[in-house]
Length: 104
Image (cartoon, rainbow, N blue to C red; front, side, top):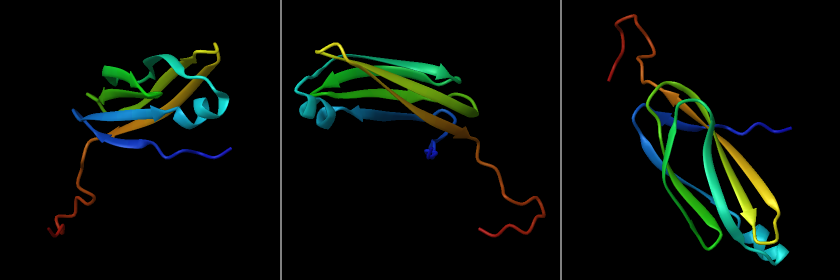
């Protein structure tokens, strides 16, 4: 099993993400009829959800440090369901050294 590197955020960032099902539904001869975005774990928030040409887009905003798991559930017109997960790792910038010898 391969591990996916999480998307990097900083506190208070708001970034648009998209999930593109166009190739998959094109091969299957179907279309995406609805999409549900949710925060499976963590403290991110989701807004501005949209669906156009089998591509789902939403804004993910982070307000605290840690990791959030975002779940995107698509229902296709032929009743298949596909679920996509991705992680957002939220860091606060800190200095790498406390020795006082940092150079800028």
